[in-house]
Length: 262
Image 1 (cartoon, one colour):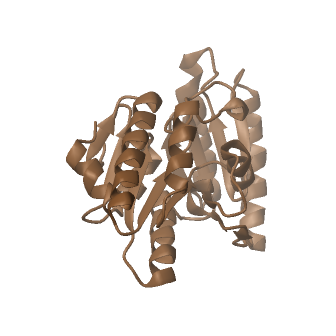
Image 2: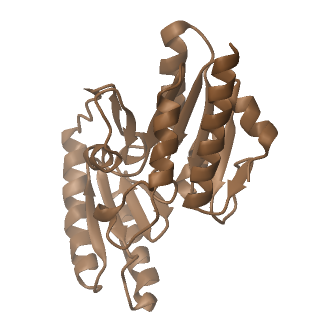
């Protein structure tokens, strides 16, 4: 759990960006990803933070941007980074993914190969993303089939070439763009800092291996929070989604008090 001094230091930041992964951080992991929702306690804490001056909330996720916007119920002023940094929406303005003909051709070849592999494993699922694919195995009942499927998927991507491979919780992802959540966090900080030429402090929270890229770009004065178990570069850890919602509530309370004292 982040200590009170860490929370108090964040609360006193002149400008604060609260950047969050979605699944496993604000919403519990579920078998059907389309049913994921932010917990009521987490939603209440985010509402309080958004209402404060010089405080921004952003989501940085492996989810496709449209799906992320729907699940987070984000408004037109939202800061969203989807597909591990590939897709970006800044207050309603979308960055153009603009795939090349070569990227499209490689994706078509990989799609055909992965479709055949996933179809052969009951309850495995192939997710189509703007610049790649995700092979989901969370619902596979015959767990002895998972490792061979993941290995074959990697081999298929390697044989085609030009894909970045990421392993997460019950998923292996392949992307024709070599960007990360760290790139997304860095971009958001630079944007907010440039708006008023004033430094922006960052809280980033994540639960998966892919979030380590975001923890790696944090600077002195920032705070990285790992949600759940596993090795991490984050400087703080909480047990689960409920515990992180409580941390956000503590941060909101401390920042509200800090704002009143100005």
